[in-house]
Length: 263
Image (cartoon, rainbow, N blue to C red; front, side):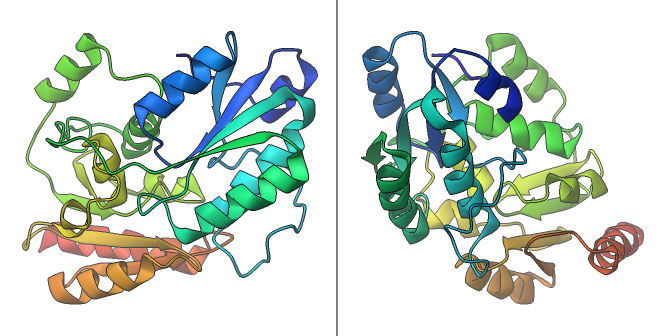
């Protein structure tokens, strides 16, 4: 299986088909789709790619779900199918978005659920050191293209004592992650994905009691219930971001990271 990392404009201008996906579908479903559509690379629809806002999804909806729908519609005939996570490992909105895309894009939407592997995999990138955004991006890419033996060894070798934590899903905007130091450890749903257990609430809600953690939730996402409760319980910082990362929010995150590092 192969992941397409091209921009939306490049994909639309070319003639190569893609298979869209969102969330963390089970590997067997992705492999089955790859066999049915040989030569088509996978394209992550969760990511903001500058697609025209179709207003198909209300503004009062998670921006990631809006990305899924707008990207799928923008791809036009380059999109041959979608493998959609529609169970507890995504959210109810993922199930509803699958219905919308099937109707409006006129492509097959393969609905999947992912209970996860029996034994959780290693959280190598979550516990590594290095730029946080690059690590989170690679965790999501690994849904289609797993880490190589060399990448895994490098991640293990770089593991160090964390100074901060980031809890949540890959955020929109991803610039949130640029605020964190390289010594940030990853928790929440992103960690669940790396460990192959995207619907595991026990893993999602497990955090160390003494680490300064920013609990991120996307605006209008149900996971804000978890983020707010965990932040209160562990004296962390709950951040809820919708369409943009405002200067005030950035300043608050930076202040929390700076002051907690001193403490």
